[in-house]
Image (cartoon, rainbow, N blue to C red; front, top):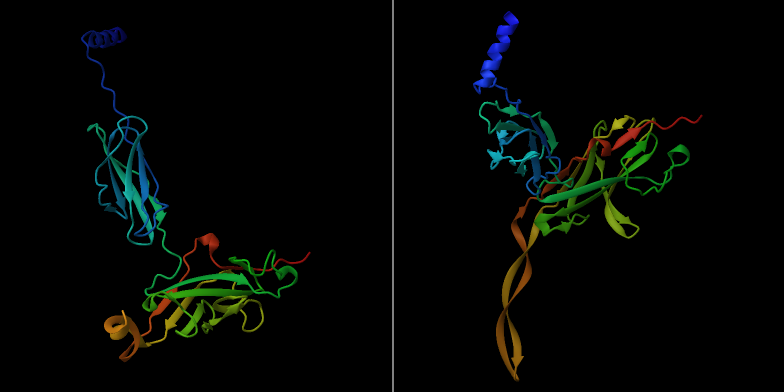
Length: 304
């Protein structure tokens, strides 16, 4: 009898046009993007994919991204909302998206965090001296330590016992972007973690191309670098103090026109000794390559 009554009640609700309430699906949101952004110069698209229409708020390290406070999704599947993000700081940033469905009966939801490594120039960014450095294998290695392809191939992986040549290039904005060379550089050196003294950089001609070099000898002998793993280093270049500057001047120059001498004022540059020298700039470079591209030292293979 109890079963018959229950069935009758359900039938009565259906006949009256009253249907049981069906709960809406919980909101979902997935965030992608951010990995192509370059600090201050190149934005990237942050794309939120949801399971219904609504608004998306984007955040970077917990702070709402300007212009992306309420980005509407598309109104048909796939439901997507896009934020154009231009980071102003070069670092790893935790990105997230908060999705608020149009259906007010459904609660808002926050996406899983996406950690984006913001791109920054690998050359020195300490103004006004910009520096770039790479490493090659010194010639002369033999046996298992001999170069696989070419001793001058740019590479980041070396074997214990090889000599690593640092090649460094610099330009000084204070000097109109002039190349840093032996005439305008007071000192240049590389500091390697685990090495007591800085390694001086020497400027020279290498098969018709001039740049700075320093050598790190690896091995087990006294005075050689022997720590396996990533080799952390820092390049420093210091410009000479500026004691003479080119300044714009004017002078009268004689000119013959139709057989007659006339005078006109012309501008020219002249060197002027400064009463108070301008302190030479200092530039530094700490490579920010990805983990798989960092300078690394490995043990030499054992002959079998």
